[in-house]
Every structure is written in C-alpha cells, then in structure tokens.
Image (cartoon, rainbow, N blue to C red):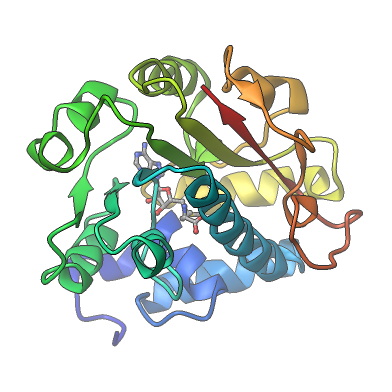
Length: 260
Ligand SMILES: C[S@@+](CC[C@H](N)C(=O)[O-])C[C@H]1O[C@@H](n2cnc3c(N)ncnc32)[C@H](O)[C@@H]1O
C-alpha cells in the first residue's frame, strides 16, 4: 500500500502498526513510523507479535480438536498468513468464522479475502458495544448460538479502557453456550516494558484506539469470569502448549484459554 494515498494515511492505527510489526503490507508510512518507534521502545515487540499470532493458531487447533466449529474473532486485525478461517476450514471446510474489528481498513481487507467464502465474514464493530456484535446480521446468519463457539480476544483488550472492557467481555462471554471457549492474550504489567509506559501511551494516543495499557495477571484473569481455565493456566504467550522458545524476561504478553 503506498503511503499518502488515503484519508487513513496520516493517523496510525493499532491494526496497521501490528501489521507493520508482522512484516505485512497493509499499512501506511505513519503506521510504519509508529511501528519503528514501538520497536525502539520495546525491541521485542516484533517477536511478541509473532509469538502472539502463533498462540492464536495453537488455540484455534486446540478448540477444533475439542469439536468447536464456529469462531468469533474480536479485534481480528488485518488479515495475515494463517487467519482463523484458513486454519479452521483446512480441517472443517464449513467451519464458521466471524471477524470483528473497529478498523475499517482491516475489515475491508478481510471482506476482500472472504468474498467467495460463504462461511466467513468480517464486520466493523466496536466491541465496547457487544450487542452490536451479537446482533449483527452476519453473526446471526453464520453463528448458531446453540453450538459451542470459540471467542477470541487476542492481543486486543489492552486497547480497551477499564470499565468498557469488563462489561463488554462479560456480555460476550455470557452469550456463549456451554462447551464454548474464551481465548485471551493480553499485555501484562510488571515487565521491563513498564519502563516504557509513557512512550507507549504517547505513541498510541495518536492512533484510533487512544491507549494501550497492560493489566496485572489478576486483572486479566477477571475477564474469564466463571469459565474454567485450561492447563497450563495464564502463561507467557509463547509458553502456552505447543509454542516455541522465547525470552520470558523480555515478554510482555500473557495468554490463557478457558471453557465456559
Ligand atoms: C494488535 S491487533 C491484534 C490482531 C489479532 N487479534 C492478532 O492477535 O493477531 C488489535 C486489534 O484490535 C482492534 N481493536 C481495538 N479496539 C477495538 C474495539 N474496541 N473493538 C474492536 N476491535 C478493536 C484493532 O483495530 C486491532 O486490529
């Protein structure tokens, strides 16, 4: 995507900064500059993004192994290699996938990729208004609320402010039938990244999400409510089963999966 050729080009977005970190090409000069600034503050930011993406893949495989056939990926981002529908439909051709993102560029790219896919769709919605997600015509058309659903909130809740985040996740989780799963990865406090908090806050203040704030492990666990967290619990994102090597000392993202 060439820089300077869109209304979106001057203001970075969290979705496109993340795409730039992952080496994608759906981003503008302002996003690439923000990604460079993020890497200057947190040199492992690219590793974290890749480890996070790999966790998402493993979590989807985990849910497929347990019979989940439909997925709601909230804060899904710019489509990149190994999207949820690619992983799921490789094993279950009619697995249903709904992508939800606040970023219009992410949703436009997703719908472009999905135009010939009858079992997947992308919708633009702000998860702080969960009813808008749950009652969206595409969700009602593709998701059967009587069958287990895999709810993915991967690397996105640290962009959602306190009060909104808990009420929204509670509403989404409460809508899930028994046997469903909640998958969360999240920026965590009490890591070396804390020292860069002011720089990161200033960087994201210029974007569409306004803020990026880690939470404590206890605060992150609260998102799961009464759902039962599966082994090994809340761990560094690369340490969730099946992951590769990583540097726990430099990581600032944790992850867990729970069954409703
Ligand atoms: C870091 S990306 C993560 C993408 C993907 N989940 C992954 O882990 O690879 C965070 C995404 O959350 C989206 N997002 C942030 N706040 C949101 C909100 N209130 N509602 C929906 N999406 C949101 C951003 O637009 C961005 O695409």
